[in-house]
Length: 75
Image (cartoon, rainbow, N blue to C red):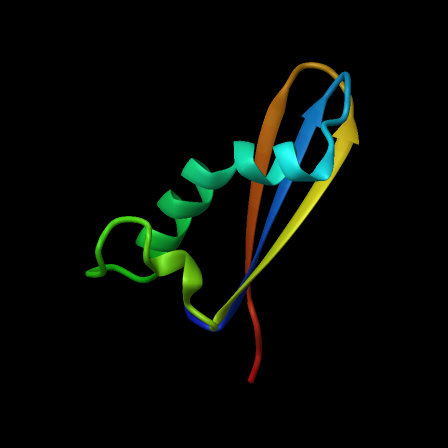
């Protein structure tokens, strides 16, 4: 993917999580995506890159799944 971009995490499960726990539960996934988008930084540092906009959504459904959508932002 090319920067700048928007990354949207959509969590699908039978029950929704509260916002704090939801974002915390995605920290490892966020770090992996950021490291892929911005290689070469120390682990866990790339997610602070200002060229990446992070969005979080939840949907009720079964089975549990996490969808990750990356869209390039036109400057």
